[in-house]
Length: 132
Image (cartoon, rainbow, N blue to C red; front, side, top):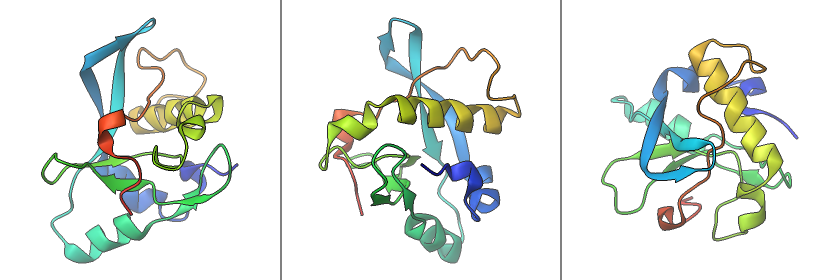
C-alpha cells in the first residue's frame, strides 16, 4: 500500500506533525507515542489537511489521515489506517506499525531502518475512530 511519505501533500503536512509520548500506556517495548497534528492558524490550510486522503496501509480503503480527537478540544492527530469504528484489524496491523515507524523517522530525519525508541503507535479506543 501507499505511504503518506509518498503523498504529494507530505511537504505541507510534515511541519504540522509532532511525536508525543503517551504516558497513560506502556507496552512491552516501553512507552507508546502518538503522532499529533498542530492546528494551523490558516483556515485554508486546515481544510486542506482535513481533506487529505490516502489508502489505508493495510486494506487500501480511502481514509482521511488527519482527524480530530473527540472530547479533546482542538486536538488533531495522524493515522494511516481505517477508523476503529470500521475495523480494529487495520489499526493493529504490521503495515500500520511500519508506516508509523517510517513517519517518526522522517520527522526526526533519521533513516527508517535506524533503531527507534518509539516503536508502534496504535490509536486509542477512546478516540472514537474515524472523525470524517
